[in-house]
Image 1 (cartoon, rainbow, N blue to C red):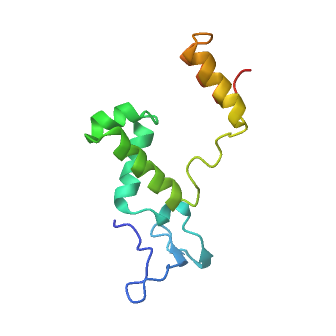
Image 2: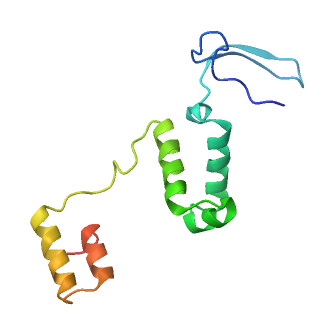
Length: 127
């Protein structure tokens, strides 16, 4: 079975599902049905999502499986995120002001804190 087209072959507008049919009992339903956000993804992007899930979101495993570099995988992931209607990194916390960031970097350079501690502070995980 082939995937349903999502764009009109004439004008390229988004198609909508208006009829569903059960081949087992010959029941049909008519109405307006949503295809879902994943219908916006290209077949290549869907394959990328399946690989991402199969690799449990571990980019290093995806690098090995797909033979692509880390930046390429991140770029592809950001394209999928945007296609699903989100903005990559939008939910990341940016609560720290410039002075706090500078202090953390200075403390790291002076050896007062470790790189791991600096990362946790910058992520807002500890003070």
